[in-house]
Amino acid sequence: MASSYGLHLVRVHERTEGREPELSEVRDRVRNDLLDRCRREADKALVDSLKERYEIVVEGLSRQ
Image (cartoon, rainbow, N blue to C red; front, side):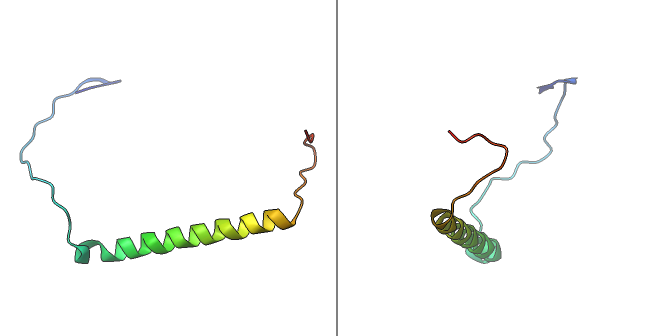
């Protein structure tokens, strides 16, 4: 294996086949990821609806 520091040797002592985890092993992570995604989508929808109702002006920038 090469890197910016030169060549490196890697010795593999053991190899384990990958597997799909059971839902019970990842349930909390899946739930939290889903809740986070829903929150982000709701936040974006709110900001988008506010943008439609207001004119946003940033001082110091020329308007084209």
